[in-house]
Image (cartoon, rainbow, N blue to C red):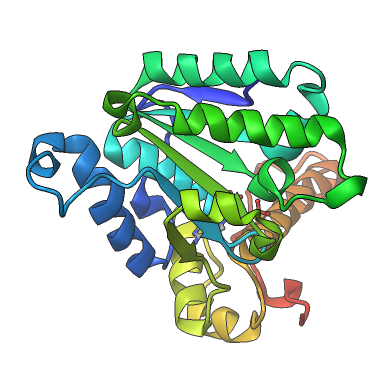
Length: 269
Ligand code: ATP
């Protein structure tokens, strides 16, 4: 119970195609992670090509970092362990050494595996001088020691994937261990359009609905904001149907769910 999730490949249920936009990032992750994990023999000759051991995804909240991590595990066909920095520093209080060792020995057994560390800044943030909590400091040192101590065989089959909204808070030693850093930006209009197409792929939309118009009107929205907007709008037909049912005084026709109308849900950011 010291990790928030352990999921075998095939059970995550998220693939790259479920993520709108972010094509360049998917391509980079394919080269850095998927190929070496699927075809390790291609990376075991010479010194130039080595599987990447640590990647940092950074950028504003809700831009799809967690989604990318999960889809990456699916696409690479590897196990997925997810831990959250802030939960670890609060829950693991006092047991840092034991639990860190347990995490890494567990990961070695599950390898090939991606260990996703969300809010990596909480766990591996910069040294906070005298004010820093002793337990946090111990936790970070234990984590980095266990990470460095992975046997070389395991280190090629265990990828640490960190995510943060606060990259400048990370300790230099941690940054060095995450040699590939990928910025996950807020989507522009064209990318909001792609994300909306993914989010609304299976919805019954009101006739005349324009994806382009909605993408234009949602300047500043993250993927998560777009999803929340669509979910909020999807409730309205349900409420209307319940209302229709209440008003239906013996009419023969059963009320039907109206198509999704997103028109008046947008609030400018
Ligand atoms: P945080 O930094 O706050 O942890 P995050 O970058 O990890 O956020 P996610 O948790 O991956 O963001 O995204 C939240 C939700 O937003 C996703 O579960 C998904 O529903 C939606 N979402 C975000 N980006 C996209 C995208 N590019 N395509 C489709 N859905 C998206």
